[in-house]
Image (cartoon, rainbow, N blue to C red; front, side, top):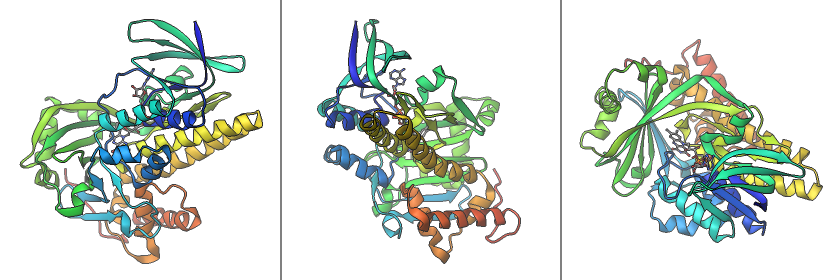
Length: 417
Ligand SMILES: Cc1cc2nc3c(=O)[nH]c(=O)nc-3n(C[C@H](O)[C@H](O)[C@H](O)COP(=O)(O)OP(=O)(O)OC[C@H]3O[C@@H](n4cnc5c(N)ncnc54)[C@H](O)[C@@H]3O)c2cc1C
């Protein structure tokens, strides 16, 4: 039997539940099919200040505040040998409109978001895995398997793919283009008694840059901190011991990480996940929009993933609205794709450059001239629009990085590990 909806959403992560809530609030009949039963573990625990107005728009901010997640006021970057450090406080950013975010356990956050979508009127089915989608006359169908193995086909006018790195429709259409260089893996775990800074800085995301790899330190609750290392797949493959031993080896050989981890006790196991950056060639079909990681995935240095997922979901709903209004999806969907690619490209460039030494040399040596640190502050907070005043500063920042590649404008960094 075929049930019919206005929109079907594949996946109930932040992208899927944002689209589900917004469509339900517009009184559309919407179905979210999520293969897991929530709460479920997910990596990606540091949010950006620009996430907060989206939570507000969804009407879910009070529930998120009530969960008591650690408050995040800024971010810190340090070299593994402790020779350089730079910190950003969002509040101090001249171009940064939203000044505070939170660090989260994704199992809790995603559960709150998905329940909120259901409370807003979306039909949420957990334990349902979508196998494929098909285009039919004036609509789309998806074939899915339910928790008891039952198979069902659902029909809708519109389809939003929010299946994350599962990339369901992109894989079906073979649209995924891997980044040629960013073939990374993350080795991570949760710990008690990680050394955090006192006061407001206790909630900062800490990024510790080593040679070709980096650590994150993210406090996800009052006592628990997520610590992970992103490294080349190749380097991981050459390690002969266990992931636990590799993690410990890197911690012990980098003073900045060791300083945070001396008294740390692990909770649960060390996990490994792939971290390959990719984009789909196109983000739309005639009645289909791809959001979040199902549009593209970016190395998580700048904690942009959840924000991009929620922002793209919001834009997808606006594009569907406009397509219904016009009776034609071509223009609104082109607009959607342009907006989302522009936001992704903004961070894509930051991520690619982050792995180069000249970037680190300029980034770790901020000079107040032309308000460049303020522009970087806004970028780290999630300001992807920012207009011309932000754009020219970021172009100048990248020009300085380019010049630094040839002539030292800032002191050189030599990575030893
Ligand atoms: C190592 C690492 C660290 C990261 N750190 C950060 C960070 O600090 N901050 C940040 O913002 N981001 C971070 N990210 C990125 C972040 O996790 C993602 O960008 C974000 O979760 C994307 O949200 P989404 O809704 O698009 O996808 P997801 O959150 O992955 O949700 C997709 C959902 O779809 C479901 N699904 C998949 N396939 C199907 C199917 N066939 N049928 C039904 N359901 C399906 C999945 O079960 C899942 O619940 C990190 C990622 C990695 C790998």
